[in-house]
Image (cartoon, rainbow, N blue to C red; front, side):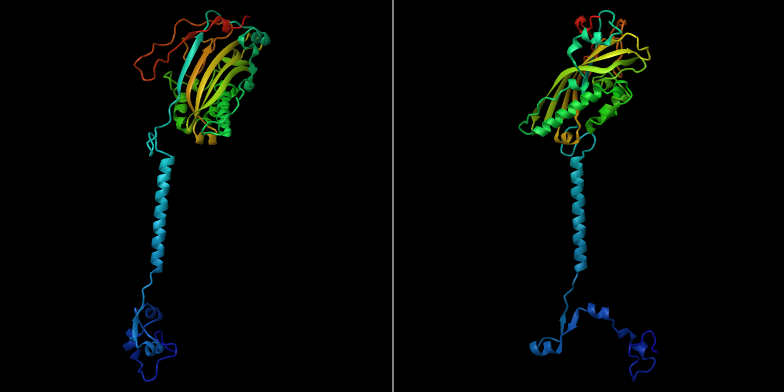
Length: 358
């Protein structure tokens, strides 16, 4: 048997045993031959065309071209994705396209102080019947949706979506027992556009009467240690309407009055109940993403509520005056007319006609 370098047929005759070492350097394997740039013509080609004995082979680099093409495509896709994400999800404090950040919610909370003691009674039916809320409807029934009519750039369905989202916000922020008690904010928070969530969260983490960060500008909430609902059937009356402000924006205005029957927290059910009235005017703004995602920008909130004492801080919670109580002397701190937030320390007087005649 031949050694490792022997040809398959063995060592040719006539070569001495040491000859293979002499000629090892001139033995070419198949891969070397295929890669050669010169190739011998066949005998038929040489006879027919009188061509030279050899021809130059064309170099083929298919593998390299394919890899280069794939690399170029990957770079193009990565660049396009980066541009798209930068436009669709701009960084904090500005956008790639130059659009401003979301408009913050501007809010006003106005306590209404009674002239005397708050009237109350054990009879809830009489309490409502002797008040302006006698004809109000109960709960969400008092927040009917108006007819949804298409606008120049929005369909009937899109207008209906805006109205429905606005109604959901009003219901959750004014009627949900877990929200009124101050226990939860999530039912309202999930409806707020993500651009406003920083402002929303700060309003509850650090409530301040600065016109932008009052928890009571976003929703109605009481102090559960002092107040509880005497009747879960909250009376409501109001209206809503939608309008197109430009080709990409719908706005909805909701104006409702809510009447709550309250009593001291933990008191016997025989304790006298009194009425607490809240008037809320909310302004909502919707772009097409908001309509699709069932969320909204809340751009304006004005709340008037009483009976309240003007001396109470209403930024975190409302502290209603209950049956037999009277407003404390004093009022809100003075307002700085040079402050950018404007005059937010406001207080009014609750008209006698707004109180039940009991």
